[in-house]
Image (cartoon, rainbow, N blue to C red; front, top):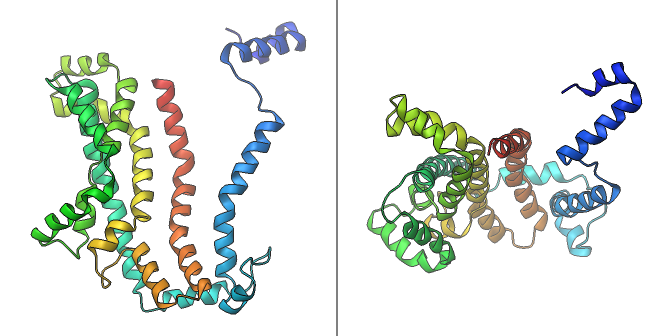
Length: 301
């Protein structure tokens, strides 16, 4: 098939335009209209405004917020001062920040590994009881987390892990959502022919998983890692229960900051801004690569 520049050289611009229209009709491509851009702009503004509102409050002071809870359109000049006050407060901010990094990173890595292993088994291996077992795993998603808090705390107390980061990491190293996510992706993105070809070439089960399943699962694994990192970074309920005030994660430390300075919302919002910045940096660094990986996996599937 000739490309449109070649067609333009051989048959003229009219033929090239006709060819481009035909290719667009075949591929289903269509230029987005103004309505699409208007909706996307509205969604973007709605999504960004809470962050901008927090930035406005963080750049204000307690007296100004008490007089007018709705801040001016442009941020005031107290942001740096409020950020320094948060860093210098008695909540042990840097320890909480380090704990959040450790918990989010370690949990993401182990959850992706175990979920990919389980997803590969459910998607491509044949064993008795696979269907009912997968249904049981998915059904656990319907059980609220709050119902398991008491027995989970008792288990962690019996193991002597309460107050340590291991008590936050261990219950989250594998989740039903992660297993379901990887199972659905691998069932579509990984054909049986590749697995059979690897087995014919002499690969063991582990080698087949390493050289065939893992490359195919990378786009979904990257998205799962990002979702898990964000969820663990913002997780408050379980760390607040199982950790003590001397060894908190960042959301728990911000709660302690709120307890110490209940009326100073500028200080509280400054802490929120600091805790949000790492997530923004992660999205900026990985966003384009993750989207490209998902699109690549969709094309392969």
